[in-house]
Image 1 (cartoon, helix red, strand yellow):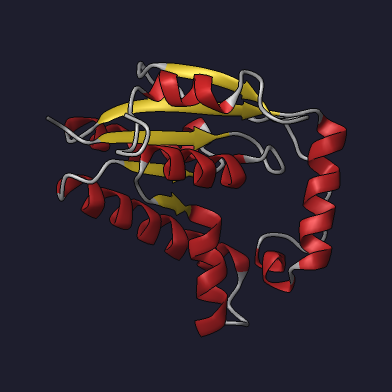
Image 2 (image 1 turned 45 degrees about the vertical axis):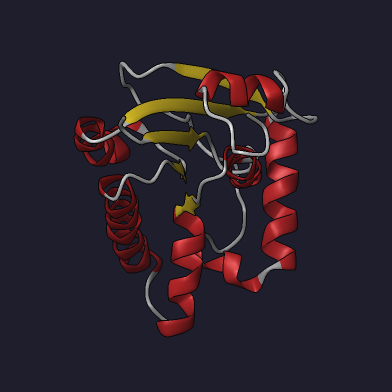
Length: 175
């Protein structure tokens, strides 16, 4: 049996990282989050330009995800997967894993509040932007993999149990 790659995607402030960690906990697998990798890089290169960190984080992210999948580890991978940037990294992983996509959506005002709060409360978040500003249009990753949309504006709609059911995997304590 092949491992499953659960891709959690959506725009900034959509609750992707929180959902990815909750989902990974329920399934019983690791969550690999691109922004957490980038934030970890800040400690080794605190003055590196954002674009340089972003490129290094992208390579490390896909390297870690691929390594886990090749080892047979079901993985939740979270990032703001936009089509032009992320599809080239995701498509080859379909050869080694079953891919499911969970796309997060959120009210724009709520997303901005979340981004501003994170930026103020966690100085390492500044590796992503000088100060939160309105974002442009988000271009979802296009793939033929099964996908579902989750609204994270106020909790999860559909609920976490429905997301776990969509993924089709349950950790040992649940199954």
